[in-house]
Image (cartoon, rainbow, N blue to C red; front, side, top):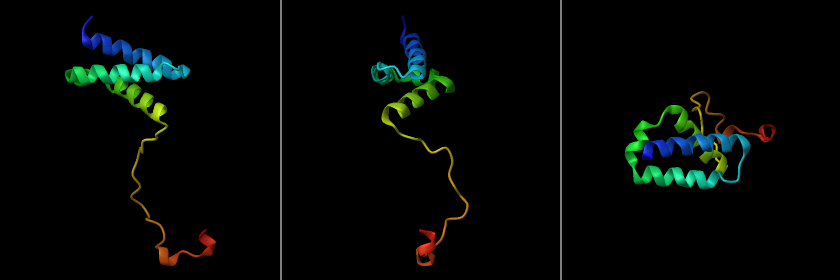
Length: 87
């Protein structure tokens, strides 16, 4: 079995484990990382959905939230203009 096929199977398995909050998820993330590190050409073969599964797994494992947008609107009040009512 070639590296790309192994990687695809690991990502599909990770997707299933994410849905079930399976305890083997960290092992799969490590396996995917090692595979991509060993054969970086496989990164270019990943679909957006596969990348999303990996990012979701890492996000869940590390309890990290990735910002989805940047606020460009009102910056808020200047510190000198903040009063007790604002707290």
